[in-house]
Length: 117
Image: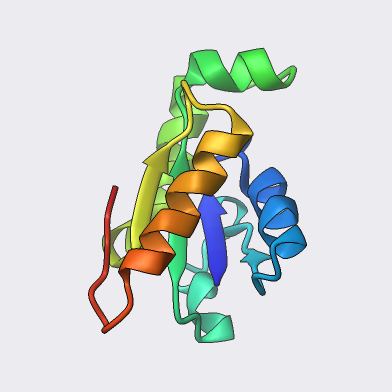
């Protein structure tokens, strides 16, 4: 599984939580790269795309950038977002809820059916 998303959306936190559950998860810092398909390098079987708004970003960390940078990050993430198996806006979520949604979506994918929450 690869996890992509904008800065402060919870990629590393989600990866760490999933690893404790035995999920082989990797963060791909696609939001910082002009290589639009970088997320595909690991040939992931599952792609989770995380989002958050600027208010949540500032609540989580001291960020110097604003909406313009967020928009640039989403331009870089467009291919990943269009091809993800699961998109989650984490702005109003705590980590356990994000993890629950990912685990539930992966469980419901059995039989090849993708699940988007």
